[in-house]
Image (cartoon, rainbow, N blue to C red):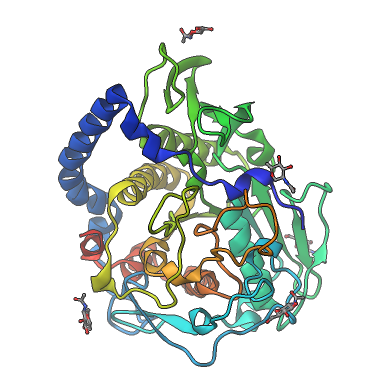
Length: 434
Ligand SMILES: *[C@@H]1O[C@H](CO)[C@@H](O)[C@H](O)[C@H]1NC(C)=O
Ligand SMILES: *[C@@H]1O[C@H](CO)[C@@H](O)[C@H](O)[C@H]1NC(C)=O
Ligand SMILES: *[C@@H]1O[C@H](CO)[C@@H](O)[C@H](O)[C@H]1NC(C)=O
Ligand SMILES: *[C@@H]1O[C@H](CO)[C@@H](O)[C@H](O)[C@H]1NC(C)=O
Ligand SMILES: *[C@@H]1O[C@H](CO)[C@@H](O)[C@H](O)[C@H]1NC(C)=O
């Protein structure tokens, strides 16, 4: 499969920020702002989503206890993996870590254990029965495609899909499972909103993008009405230099290094992009599907930036007490949750469901799951940096299908909305952030 050349360069040079005094000031101000905002945000964040539901009686679906399936630890699973690069053809070249000589295999042999319940390992036959006659769209960046390819591989024990793509463009694929009349599609939209590359090079040689923060990206917004499930994500591309447009005017930028354009935080663009994407979904007349926000999956560069020899060499997951969500990862996570909450309330008015596929904490704990240098041959062009953003297949991203199936099972259970949310997130879910 062809690869979008840019996707190996997930980040702008964040470190160069510190060399510019003005930006340093901005950064400082911003950090202060963040420190002030965050303690205020936690209670606010939790409130409308979950507290509303705290009085509803627990449903019997998962036993009588409420359980946050996204809060837990990785535990050994000697049975894994459930496919290999010889049984599944859908593994993207650059995530086929075994092919490129990754020596260790332990990283495949873990499953997610929520603190207060069990998360069953993915059952492909059960999944395909649930989605029979339905359709699912992945909208976002290459990590979304990574997730879809993982799902194809997990399902391959039952059936392979046929390619029913409308275009030869690899970024817009459509797959159909004939025996189940189930269709999956991916829509490439790394910023979720309308975007164009203003300069292929830009201040950090990672491109400079014009983001039209209030304009729909019609490449997907015009295509998704028919889908039953939408899985939406974005994140890593916001690290690159961008110019933010609103109402056709430049309102600021992120690290564009132009004297007359104000530098704004990354989360400014991130927030507006989600707001616009969710507004698009909520404005579609015929859309009746469920929207899953797959939350940000942090990268794991250590000992340097992505382009300064940074790498991800660990071979075991972290335990919860060994790391925590902080800095820009926390900021992006909180930002997307705030926008999700607004969209969910908007959607409710017209009967649209929004769900949180809250993978952030689980993936924060998996520094061992990335391709690192095993996404290509050693002699290939050195501009292919160590990849600590995407996930080896098989690998920890397979767990996203465990989460997804569990969530789909709850949709079909005939229980009310409130018990659904309560099951997924116990009221103390905010603790994870600390
Ligand atoms: C699968 O991985 C093995 C190493 O485990 C490698 O030798 C082989 O070339 C890979 N095959 C494919 C089809 O990627
Ligand atoms: C397949 O599912 C679609 C809905 O996704 C439906 O419109 C169509 O009639 C189904 N086809 C068959 C053969 O069941
Ligand atoms: C900033 O300056 C450049 C030229 O130096 C000009 O082309 C551009 O229109 C200016 N942008 C704004 C927002 O004033
Ligand atoms: C984390 O918890 C485990 C098990 O409870 C314990 O063995 C380990 O020492 C703890 N590690 C740290 C860094 O606190
Ligand atoms: C390596 O990549 C650079 C930048 O993309 C390109 O200019 C160069 O031609 C490539 N070299 C080889 C040997 O492919």
